[in-house]
Each structure stands twice: as C-alpha cells, then as structure tokens.
Length: 125
Ligand SMILES: [Zn+2]
Image (cartoon, rainbow, N blue to C red; front, side, top):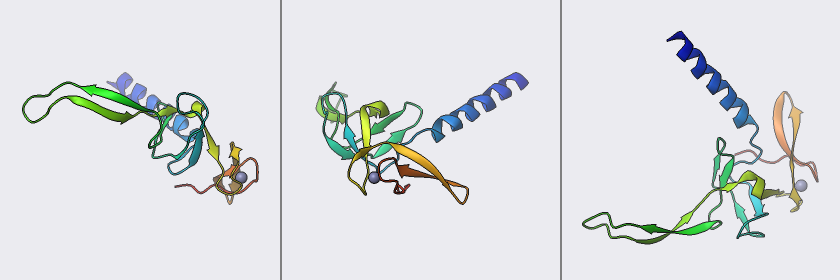
C-alpha cells in the first residue's frame, strides 16, 4: 500500500516537470517543418504535453475508414486530424513574423515566454 502510493506521487512529480517543458501553447502560430504538410501554417488548437504533440486544425489530415456500426450508423470515410510532434513544427512570432524559438525571461519572479529573435513577450493563453 505504502509503496504503491509513493510510486504514484513520483510519477505525478515527473509529469509536472514534463509539462513545464512544453514551449508551445494553445493559440500559438506555427509553421510545419516536416511531413506531408510541410510549409503550412496554422494555429495550435490543443497541446498534448505527455505525447509532446500539438493539434493544428487542417494540418495532418488522414482519411479514416469506419466500419458500419449497425442500424443508423453506416460506415464510411472521414477526415481525421492527427496531432503533430512538437519537433515537426516551429513557432512564428506574432510580433516580428519570423520563424523563431521560445526563450524565457523572469519578470517579477514570473517566467515569461519570449521570442528569441525580437525579444518580445509571447502571450500565454
Ligand atoms: Zn519576434
């Protein structure tokens, strides 16, 4: 019992560390660097910190074949958007409009994301 609880707490802590390392946030403008949608731009709709992936509407769409599920639910082909690994996208700074990387600065003890190219603070959402 005790051992189980310790293990659980440990995994939560490492999960938190992992989360804080995600540099991209919902609403960030990105450009796709690799894959079939290379060069496309989009806005992050959802972030998956554990998988280190981001979901961008309209990017990385694959056809998914569905089996008929019975009465009233025929099978078919739907478009499904799959998340992209964060390593396959790059942030576009809303201020200088350049492909950039995320840096950090401390302001009044708070960690803020900044653009490494122009130094402006990136809004956190
Ligand atoms: Zn910038």
